[in-house]
Length: 157
Image 1 (cartoon, rainbow, N blue to C red):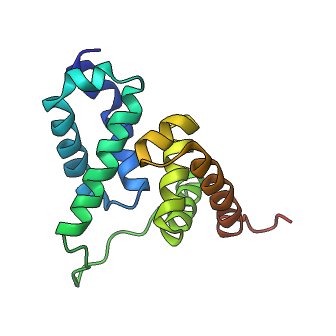
Image 2: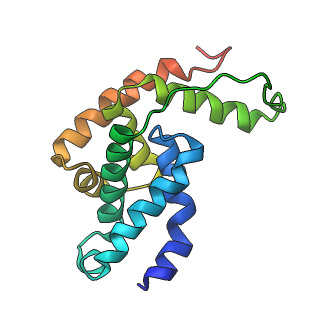
């Protein structure tokens, strides 16, 4: 696949993956751009990889780690508050999932985002995280168990 076509098709999903991995929305575009630049420099190697998407996600995860080490992610005080969100139920569900992901350990958050949002296989997730497939299975199991009470909908048993 051509690099430009790959970026056009997958960039929005990579940005969303970065956000779900805990990257602030304002920085996600920069992190993805940096990761794609690294991939561009070795695009032949990426294309020759058995699982190019896993390769790109691995670069994204390591780029995000590096960005966290370099940047201060503190909040800055402001006098102006953002507008209140609308009453869209999908927005509320998405917010509940994001809050639950933020409350989880990085290992659990990474495995859930890569497996269920990025839709990587267990093997590709293992490659992206640099761990064994069995580790992905056990982390996924523990992460799902930890996630369930965090996103429980009111009124359900």
